Length: 194
Image (cartoon, rainbow, N blue to C red; front, side, top):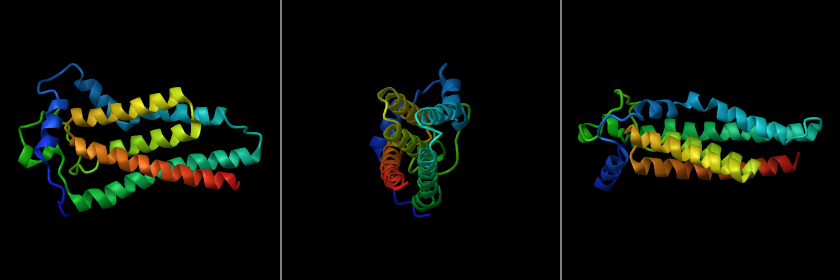
C-alpha cells in the first residue's frame, strides 16, 4: 500500500456539496440504486436488444454476437480487476466514510461504508465501461442517453453515500470509458474477420 494520492480540500468541499448532511427520504432509494443487483434488468434489456438486432439463423452473425458480448463482459472484468487488484491496493486511498482524517465530515447513510479503498471508483469505471461499450455496439440514441443517465446516477449514489471523492469518480469514468473504447475497437477487428 503506497498511499500516494492525498485528499485535497476541494475534493472534500465538493463531496460535502453532493452529500446531504441530514437524513433524507431518498436514503433508502440511493442504497437500492447503488446495489449492482438492482441493475440486472438493464443488463437483460441490453442482451435482448443485441439478440433482436442479430440474425440468429446466420452462423457468422451468431459468432459476431458472441464475440461482441464476450468482449463486453471481458471489458468489465478487465476494468474491475485492474482497479481492485492493482490500483486500489497500490494507491491505498481510504474511502471518505472510513478515513480518520475526515471523520465527522460526512454522514453515513444507515451506517453504509463499503470496503476500505476509494481510488478510483469501481462503480464509475464499470458503469462507464458498460455504457460506452454497448452504446458503441448498439448505436441507438435513446439507449445511449439511458446508459449515460444510468452511469451518472450510479456515480451520484457513490457521492451521496460518501463512498468516493469526486476525483475518484472522475478517474473511474475516464478509465472505464477508455477501456470500453479499446475493447470496442478490438471487437470491431475480431468481428470483421469472422
